[in-house]
Length: 110
Length: 113
Image (cartoon, rainbow over the protein chains, first blue to last red):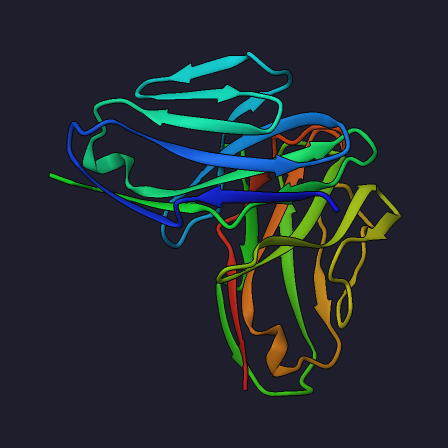
């Protein structure tokens, strides 16, 4: 069964303290892996698409990487405005359906 | 401004009272979808539509109906709501089914008493 697991469930960082969020997946064949950011009371907002192992994408303080079994969202020198829930989703070769993980709640304290 | 608009944003209703959550997008997207988000369960797809008059079930379609009469609108209908449908609902759209780059609405929080 295709599934996505994100860890940790919650992460507290001090401003400037770099860290990584993990998204591990089990899927028969990967069409794409997607990262979203969700602020409280808002809908998810698309961040990145990764298609193949070794691929990396960057946006400001965020960098997403992909291996054959997992993806990491690296946050470098985070700021309080990076506080949000980060969602990972995969799309399998066999289906266009997106399978979402439960998310990681990130809190960055000043 | 490109957006997906849902209404109502908040609703408290009682068991059995039919309700409709509207969704409209202004990006000329072909693909639209409804999700529910529950703590610990992530986003689960209810129904989706690849184009006008084409709809299909997602993972949790029981108790819901949809229609796609126009490209921009994709309402979610709860014919006889029950307490287990208390949830946060999101409408999303994209250029096509094969992309995972979805545009989400701001959500509709539904409570069924």
